[in-house]
Length: 335
Image (cartoon, rainbow, N blue to C red; front, side):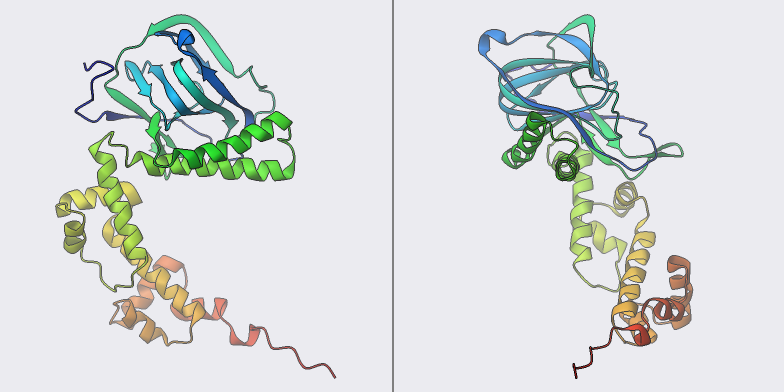
């Protein structure tokens, strides 16, 4: 294993872990938010195991810390500009070395019975700092069927690309906690914005962290989807798209399925039909013209595909959503 002062030559392999979140809308709730500073005499090479009753984000602003996890079999260094995502009931140990961090405890589903500083369960066992070979990662999303679906993948530790922006967000939560205004409507809106935005930032930045080759592959697919969403091609040849991503067609199809939950044909068919639906609602072009623009030379085939995807034929869809007789009329001049 590499020492703590030696650079790691190989990226950490991700260790996917399920969170088993309930299938209901999130209602982020702030429980605790504060700054914490550690001086050199207080740094430690041992730490007590613990579990949380809620979620915690720890942003290392200056200096370093480390977190031990049983699932990874060791400890992960937390450098300045890195953020740690700890879910409820996750066995771990936290130790500060030097510097300053921001800690934020929150719920994704409100638990009013859990009070601040009663949300941490300290255990009697202690662990020592030793390098881990795995990076635990959590799929933050509902579990449907055999596993999580459509969630954000959040590593335990993520180096941020713009840590100062995340720090500014979290400092707003510190202000809310210090003034005990969590119940105010404006504070609840801000809490939702900050927590949801921070989680989305972690998921996005994790793909650039270099922890695994899988993250880089998924980022190529996401970049491709953004490019295609801004363009208007009628056809999306898989071979050409695979070349753009620097992948074989088989690897491209597998990665595409993992990122989008659909194969390329299903995804792009949905994209073309949704674009046609937008044209039906917002323009007066003929249905045949819209079909041809999306690469459907056979209007009957276009109608069948459109009905399967949108639940109505193109003609029915336009009548339901775009009725000229119901468009607002200009007001009559005052007499």
